Length: 107
Image (tube, rainbow, N blue to C red; front, side, top):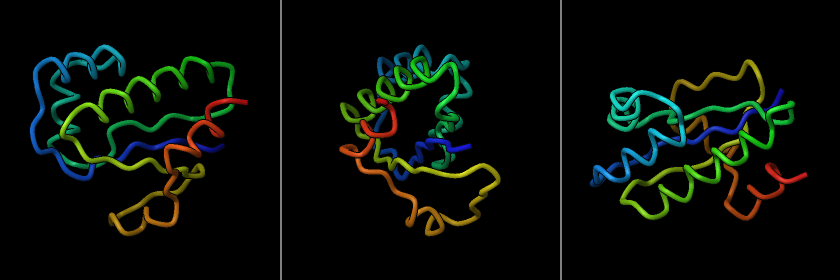
């Protein structure tokens, strides 16, 4: 199973509007969204290529759109099931650029 991971690298400033947008797209409580941003780690991790693929694609595109319009630095990663990363640099080999994101989410 392949997953798409959005990893938060740096949060400079987050507006209330952006927090609410992330909350709505992610479907998580506001406190959970704030905590994930504060921890500067995994914001979301979604499995790809299942029956809910279209729903996941919409969520990922929505989150990326919000992050691009904010002062939040992030990176996208493709990870295989069972992979666990202890350090940020462990993610470097698994980066997905935004151009490749379409390949993962559209099929």
